[in-house]
Amino acid sequence: MFASAQRSPETSADYARETSRLVAQYFCENPQDEPRAPLVQTANWFLNSHGRWAQNTIRGFAAALHQEMGSVLDYDTFDPDSEEASILWRLKNERPDPVSKTKKSKKNKQIAHQQKVAVKKTKRKKYRKSIPMRELRALVSYFRSEDGEFSLWIAGYIMLASRLGWRPGEILILQREGSLLRARAEKQSNQRGLTDTCEIDFSACLEKFPLIKRVSLISDLDRWIADTRKWEAYYKGLSQLHDNINTRLARACKNSKIKRTCTYTFRQFAISCLKESGFSRAEIAVIVNHATDRTAGTHYGKRRQGIKRARKMFGFDRARLLLVRQKARSFDRSSGLSIKL
Image 1: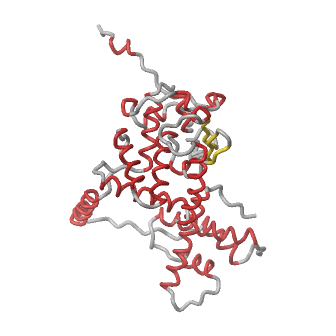
Image 2: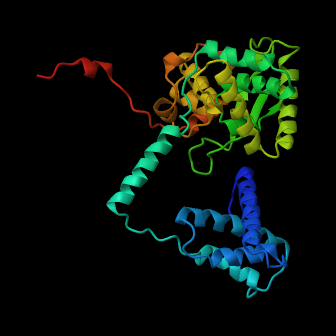
Image 3: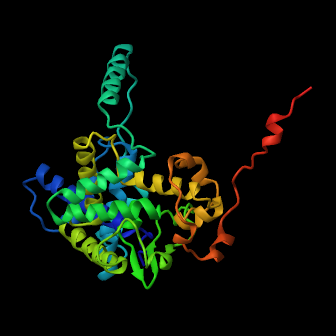
């Protein structure tokens, strides 16, 4: 009856955490109320709190509460005229009014501008879109030299991510099926992904894989994937695990005197290497799961920032090339050299 929207497990988990925080906030502000039906009480409080939050905040809170109440209605039978069903409808159609924007005086505008400038100065810099190979190796050596299993696991993450070019969330959920590495693709729901799965055939790497020198490639991969599930459980979710990787990377870069690097930098580096290795735009789109052949050329690292690798190391289903939308702009060098009379 109350069909929930198609969301990724990570988004659903974020909404569940947001609802828990709202429930805690409600009882913190209303200690006299007994927790009879916490979710219903919190939803009523939220719907009657006009002029308190911005529009975007209201939208996020309403979606989180709607998901949690919808899951309750999925498992229990309620009268369509019940309070719970009414709340669910109001979360979609009668949300609280957002905070009203007051016209600022000239002095207030100056103060707001000064505050914005101060925040901008202290704001964390954006992640870098390239990393030299020597610094990549330095990061791997740094984590291998540290004590602790998590540091060794991060070293494996860097080696995989800097070669596959998949998104960080895709790297963290990859699985091995024979000589194939597969992962559920992100960005598929907004049509920016090519297919619903990322896939790479690494059969050419089975005999030799320079960055992984211990035992064998398959045993190392299986161990790394098993450890990923362990660290996911330890940090209570993939999003928290991802945050901890970036925190460790920031510390490693500071200690190694390397410009700040995060997990997405390795995707940029891998795509730069694919360009340097001679892959076409469409082939890169298939490998990194882009819907068009223009995305990597427009938004990702430049060819000169990568290193050349053997093309046979990256096998993929060539039937997927037919799915890539051709949107790359062609450039005619001769027209640029012509002289207009």
